[in-house]
Image (cartoon, rainbow, N blue to C red; front, side, top):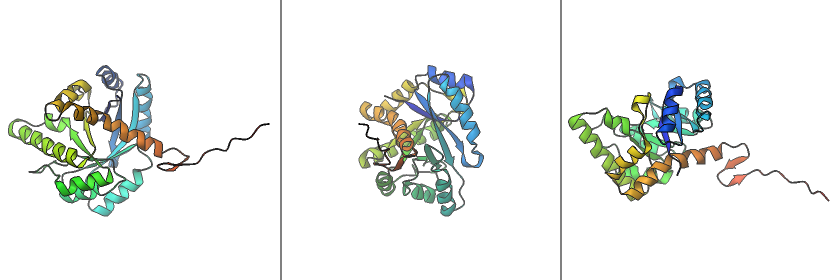
Length: 236
């Protein structure tokens, strides 16, 4: 089982710790307004030293309108293995789950008094295979009532996701080594709110998304299932 985290770590000591915490790799994401391919390449070289699988990600945020969102998704689709959209605003949540080019709706509950997902949005996310994110840092950064409410939102979204077969990913969203968590700890956390088999499935979803996008980014792949194959010369 490949366990892939989603985070922003880029220091070698942090990457080394990630390996020690039982992760097989990670998605190194940058926000769209600071995206730099060289930063990713640098992190990629460091990750190789510890035999970690690494993927390139971008998180889109603060779009003024839906046209801007679509343009940004189109700009980064062929450059990254994973595109995340920072949710919270209802129209952004809705537009995101309607776009099959997007991989993850991140923090749909951000700044809201509800979970950001209802039955309609869950159906759309299932149809377009847009995953919902359980952002562990978003939970830990809350206290008291706010933490309890965030946990309630997680439960609500997981219930809808399971009912409508929506992909779910979990992330530490760490920026430093102090925010990294052991993959077994995240699985234990999931076991408290969903059944163990579903928790296991969630931990593997990030890898499945990235593996699928990596396949589509190959030069000889036109679309899923359609490839250009080299002709083998017949030697008599």
